[in-house]
Image 1: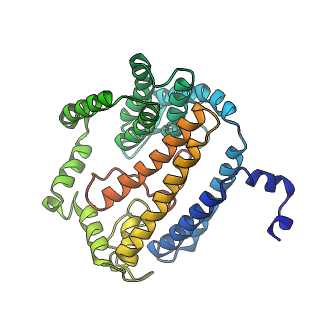
Image 2: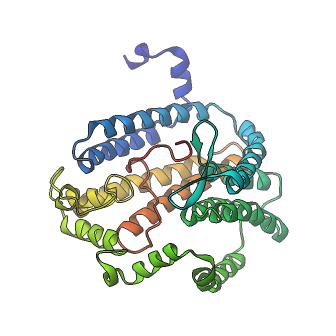
Length: 348
């Protein structure tokens, strides 16, 4: 019945999309729209915009599913090179908003850093696809340089959160390529030593305040600690089963800031409680597992490395957002995938 309503070219295209993954993604999107409706106090305009964004995303999903791994691999160098050039241009002629220079104006404002979230893992996967695996030490060093260049350019804007996300997506490719455990241990030791240096010499004042707030949010409850404190109240007050949809006090009495974007998980936790959170986490973990499973079936090394990296990066987004909202990580402005509201950040 459904097939008779769809054009033949769309039926053929959808056959290359994993039906199980698409079904779970659709369920997560539905929960996200319901939560957004509540978080925005019934603002249907925002919900409709979000639906448009999801429709565009679905169209791109179907489109990219038709592109062969070989073609994507050929695009990697160009996408990475163009992205790096755009990041350099941002530092030279970029548009400054709210104290940060992150955009280029070409009729509309574009944010090249968002492009690099995909370009970096594609480039690193391309590099390793041309090399024997597990990688040699020199290959790992070169791959790290491919990650480090855009990371430093984005940090210069400054945008610490996005730079770490870019670095993480590239590092996951290196890890999946077969990075030895002694190198992983060395990387952990390096980060441990470098973290204090980054705090004192590499961070801006507002970034250091976020770390200080994480360690002691009660020190400034009406200032830097306000977001985390109100978020923790919202999640905790939801209890086991929540207060019910549209019944959250923290959100609807305007205690919870950024409730429809970065802190929407707190809205969900207050209204659906621990049980709802566990169901939501279950959906996310299933999507990540399914992505890793499909990546393992990739047609070549490039497809397997890229698919695996994007799946693990999805988990990292989830980990950072929920950790931030629950007070376990600093506030870095990372949205909850497929739930938080937002215009496409690369084009505004």
